[in-house]
Image (cartoon, rainbow, N blue to C red; front, side):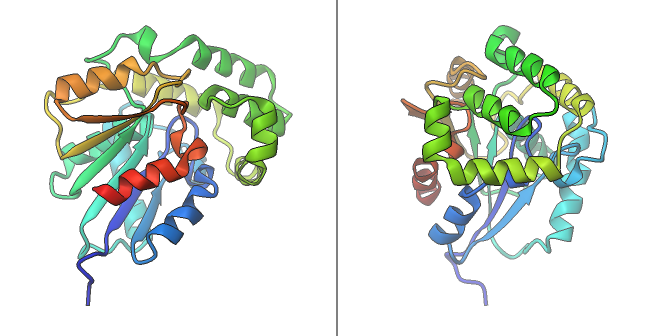
Length: 257
């Protein structure tokens, strides 16, 4: 028998990041929601699907999502909620459009839309500089992950290495095994650059934003909240990857939906 309090959660990460890059956030979710079911979905080209060529259209991500749900034995009897980050949020919105009865509500973190924000807000100098640094620093995986976290959090290197050492180790191990090909990173950037959101949200939506996001301008979340007339909650100290930096804050909002 299904308990009324049980839920499905579908989670999707962003650019060049796979399921394992949630790191210890997965453990925290299991602790806080012991009766819920969690499905960690990869964008094709990332994570466990790193050998697949990323489609140039986000709409073509969806068959890969459906296949992963089937492989993970998705429980269709439970109400389903979504949590996603950046490009993963664009993909979740597209999934919501194609399957209008899948979700009860979706939480979108630090995302953007081509029809609501300009390209300079959506692709910051920090993001471009990170891409350049990763291209010229191909061999040192540890330093690549440090660079990525410096760009996607508001932390400095000392804070990352001391306060987030365990997560850094998990991320480095996953990246070593499931690296995203540079060609797929560029294909994902292309798909994100041209993705427009619908005029109205396909489901009830909660927006979460890090006020110190250097990767995607916080103005993108404000524009989305304004155009969709939905609630936007802002963490004043968080960067782009809120779930990495402030997992308990994200979990508190998950508990309230």
